[in-house]
Image (cartoon, rainbow, N blue to C red):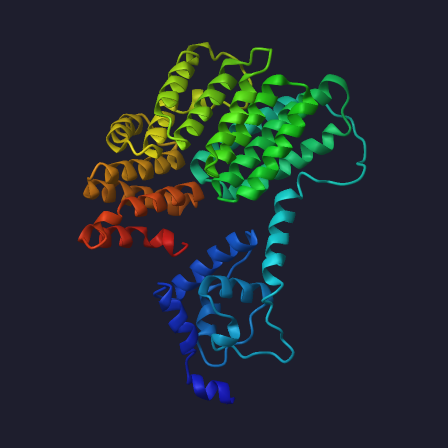
Length: 422
């Protein structure tokens, strides 16, 4: 037995202590949590650490993990494997300088590979029927997003965008313009999925791709839609004036946009107004958008949230009220909205429940806030929506006045599956 093993004893107590410190109570839970953490950190859906592997690590003289696993262990536990009881191989150099850049590089490559295919492609005949095919697939992706959340769809949708881009390079005339239009809508969905997954740099990149393809398609409605997409990212960044600038640019053109694009621009501008504390503008913009709902009659496959989401504009109003600190008004609206949310919109329901919980906390009803949070966490664990997790973080801050009360301990227990990274 080596000197290191003698110090450690017959178990890897250092790894066990680090595991317990972050709340991973069992080795099976630790393997599951580390696998989930690695998938997010490396943007690698295949990263996996099995319970058997973790049990071996906590046994006598654990073997050295692969470098990527070492990086994930360090990011999750705050310590390198050499400090966690692993036997250090000769010549190993701790990647303190390089690991962050390497992870960022992998994330950038993963996010952009489907959009930046260099060089010529082999030309082929492009049948016009492919446009209808991709449009039908897009509607299916929107439905799947409501069930699954972003992580399981990013690869599928970005791969289809890559195929569309390849076909655009071979197509001619109206077929080419049709594929550009559908390509812009696929890029918009990829951008949304990255945004929902919490990766704003990747979301920003794909929002830029959306705008480029929209401009190339010469479709003014898609160009307006792409500006609203960029405003969505600015909303998540908390840049109210940036949101307003982009939405005003979308609405300022000489040509009249389709009603649904104007609705999207107006409601997103309302979010910008809420970020700068302008309640009057919030209500004016959402009321004006409401006057256009009955005029939405196009058959385009993109931007249909106002038709697909029950109580779409009241959802936006309630969200803005919550951001403005109008807890009671927001809570009343969320009660109405949630009554109309179908079972198929599970991810949206989780986001709304988390926002309603925050509104209840701001209305000085902490017990109700915890009740809503319990249901939201169940959905957050299933869908892995970073947007939902972020909303639950807002709830934690709203519950600080009760930090010494039992209700705060109940909330911490409820949020544990999210905060532990399951």
